[in-house]
Length: 286
Image (cartoon, rainbow, N blue to C red; front, side):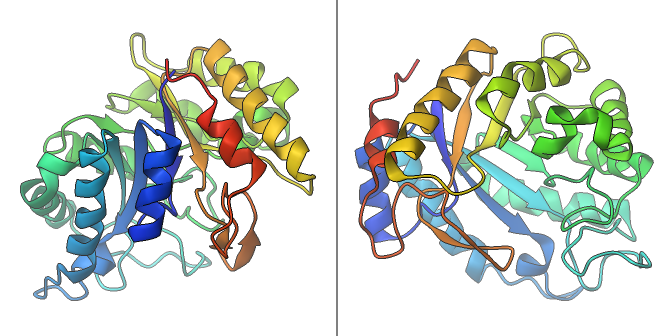
């Protein structure tokens, strides 16, 4: 099973670390506001810098996945009560499609898989403010212009604890069964003992013949360094046994994520590598 890294891998030092890890995939993200801050203004500064990182990753032998969010201060409909960080539905689907077309025209040679949104089924949460119908409309528009389209990664609790998240489950089931897509994605921060059932839950609802990937694999809670290294190995082993086509560790370097300190990284903020870094290197590539 190919192994990847989700986020925290750009920059000169991080590129060296990426080479040392011998990763086969990398994941990055981009939103509409970063490229099109106003209706008639296109600013490619941030996206071109990101593309530079993708270019280096490809030169290092990695395949690339780009998560694209429609998040926009001006091009989205108002959704009462939605989190300020959530993706709201585009006011104009054709303009949204034109945004995606512009990305593909500019960066198509650098992106292997285009992912539309992230953890979108968590309506009212950090990312979610769409209905099922609105998300499927977006996917349909994207599918016309984006090669190799991947669904938003479903939040870990959706498939790991379906009985306690009925609304998220209903959203995910409808999308998996009805939307157009070339690849599905399920995040996993569940206990290792639950991972087989978690991925089986998603696969049972997917369209036949579509690969399942995991673009966020990680632990939750406090653990010692040696425990985390052993846990990383166990998680990749479980994902491989469950038939996952590629699994990405979240993330390369410790960082602030959604306003909170995240110590999932294989490298500390000061650049020192953890025991889990060595455990990742030791993983089989296939």
